[in-house]
Image 1 (spheres, rainbow, N blue to C red):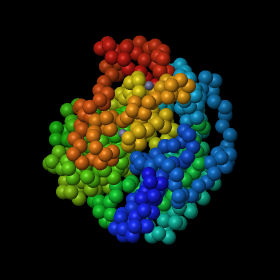
Image 2: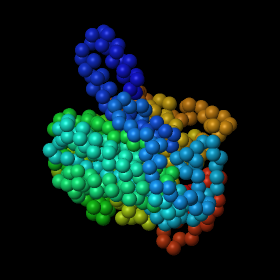
Image 3: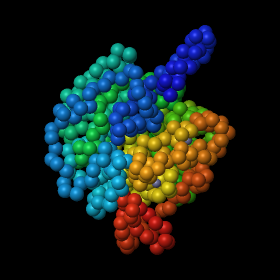
Length: 486
Ligand SMILES: [Zn+2]
Ligand SMILES: [Zn+2]
């Protein structure tokens, strides 16, 4: 992305094409900001909640990850039988597939496999906060300096985007250190962050620490490409609590809009009975405004229910819908994260896993099924930990542990087998959404694995457990469909 744009810009400058230079400079700035989310370390290449971004960055403040980690209090060694750390061990293609661990812990926050011991001292902190009026450039710089200092001194790592409109964070740290940072930020600006919804996931193993700390300036907290006062925050949709959202989901006039990117919707999504869920099938959030403009007829006169991972992507996206003249626009407060806390056992109207921007990769309700498949062998799989991408559009694709292992040790996976669902279905240039059909979750896009609601999720249902080659515990449902749990 960045390097290609830089080359184009040099050409345009040499040719003296003023308009192209201006356009490319704007594109390049966005690309560089998005690239800031990458930490450059295997196992920690997690994008930010805005959904885009990987690669090297030119303007980020970096604190050496090793130093930050060294500052942490040493934690007790993992309990006997603890699995290899997700990011480095289990996710390492060199590690052969292993058998499943013990039974599920019953905690939604237990991690993708559900069998991680909840005894660690590591916490994840997710939050965003908009400020109004927006900061000046100087205030933005002050905020960056403050946050870098507080996070470093508290032994925290991860990524913090700082725009003139506020903060967007995916951070990790020791339990007390991460809380000390939230106290600091409240004191830094009580009027803006005094009542911020800080989301903690506690008692994780140290292997869940993100590598390094990046605090860097961006233009928008979520890159939609909105200019200036467009889609202003104050005019956003109504915030619904998980319980209210749950109730509204089955309203006969409701239509849901998934504001996340396609690779996220693939592994988990809302599926309320009788209600349409519209998936814009985006690769990037910048595609959202165009999708809305083309699909207004599906939204007009409806009770629009929007959702995303933690709530941030709905903030200005809902404002955009209101600006377009829709008058019943609602968004899930705290996102899927808070919803799954409220419906931790059966997931409510949610099926599959919630894509996370930390080293859990995905997490779901206790009884969550894996609804997605390995793109190569079609075994049930839901974690984007292979760091393999579609050769055409570069979107990350699902590759199971067995295929990762085979790719490394036996035979390299041919590129065409890594082609994502969107590229398989769509013709034309990647990222160009003109003329593309609007998919709803019921069937499209073609080739998408069907969602199977586990009949075994019924309370009291007997489950027959057995070890499977994929490393999970599988059970046969009465209908004969095989579900694998991790
Ligand atoms: Zn596979
Ligand atoms: Zn693709």
